Image (cartoon, rainbow, N blue to C red; front, top):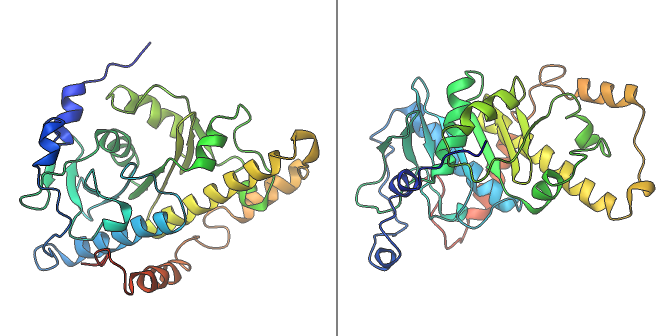
Length: 288
């Protein structure tokens, strides 16, 4: 059965007032700081989330102004998300909108005409509502991610990076653009207890207890997809996979909690890279 999509609701959430109105709308990218307005916990979440947007762009996983990364506001049922229309290079801690699980924009910078991508609300609110163990969610349309999402085989255990996902990766069949409330149920059901999922014919989706862990998981999945696309260029008969026992061992070793929670140790280094890239950048400072 085909999902029902409320086009008007999608336009309303995006605050889209028509093609002609684009020319006269306030789409400025300078936003006053909210550091002294929100709690210290929310501000830290905003800074980390803005850094994550920059990292996804730096590592070649952004898609113009599309896609979304969210984090739950500590102690609430709301989450932070990018304004629809900003490049990932332009996202700052103070530009992030706050949305509740019902799709209401609780807060966004005063005066801006930017709204929120409806697909971002549908996908991310579904995960945030269903999974208390996931506070950060990332969705991408990278070329390698879409390529593997289009393969019948899905992700293959061709590299150490991809073996970590053996038994820990979900799949969700394409149901059309993610603008339907109906898709929330199937998306959550397909995700199950996993933290990573391939959206077939669409892209990648990951979640984690923290932004640091979610980003690291996305990076591992993205690199796995890039390696697979590169390897399969030689043909299926030219690649080899280890034994089932070795694949299972590798997946166990890299599972969260076996040795450590991957992403936490790496996060300070990631922030250092964002800081270095911010020097002399023409784009707004991410932590502003």
